[in-house]
Image 1 (cartoon, protein in one colour):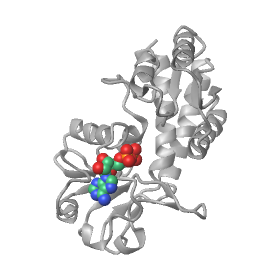
Image 2 (image 1 turned 180 degrees about the vertical axis):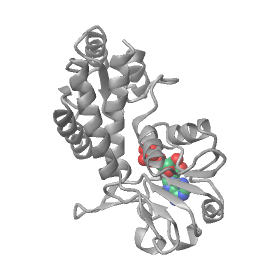
Image 3 (image 1 turned 90 degrees about the vertical axis):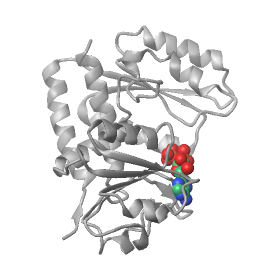
Length: 268
Ligand code: ADP
């Protein structure tokens, strides 16, 4: 029997609890989102975060900068937000235009407000990784002692996921573009997490019976359809659990960002 790891349903459940907790705290948490330029995917992600924030009672300040802004303008805005007590979390929506020094900008965020977990050695677990842990926990999928294979080693997604699962006791292998015989590696996993940004990379010969598959990929086709990294139709018959795209990791990532924000307020 195939279990669908329903991120939308789980995220709504967590959102309801979050919203109650925010009411109980009697604070109106504030989140600042900095956007540079107007990349369509970034605007879409921000729109989702704002809609979610409205639902749970979080105020969002969406600060927009033009594509050709200077680094110093951004640094001084972040500095202002760092000192603003009405702002509990600061997000710099990535990617940034190439001429800006991403790590310099990200490192400017005060550690206790870095709710996206972007800084090196951040005290927050990046939202995607936290979301995947919550999704696995909700379905009572054991992590400790399991063989986990993560496809993708990006700083924001692949590596933090691998680190989070490692710290929960999994034996973790990270695969990437230079990996030889990817299918041999992925078939060995108990839990396979795919964050390669390569639509339908994972097909039936990459999986084995009984596996749990987490699809982190999100690519949009020309026609506006969203595709994951896993060819869901061809692996469904084989694996035991899978997260769909859309409706899997995406909503879990959004809710996790706000869990980080609440943690930021609680630790104040
Ligand atoms: P994201 O931000 O979604 O993680 P990136 O493009 O930054 O996306 O990173 C993609 C990662 O996936 C890289 O680490 C890359 O090596 C890996 N990757 C991409 N395509 C393949 C592939 N065909 N086989 C194995 N790994 C891949």
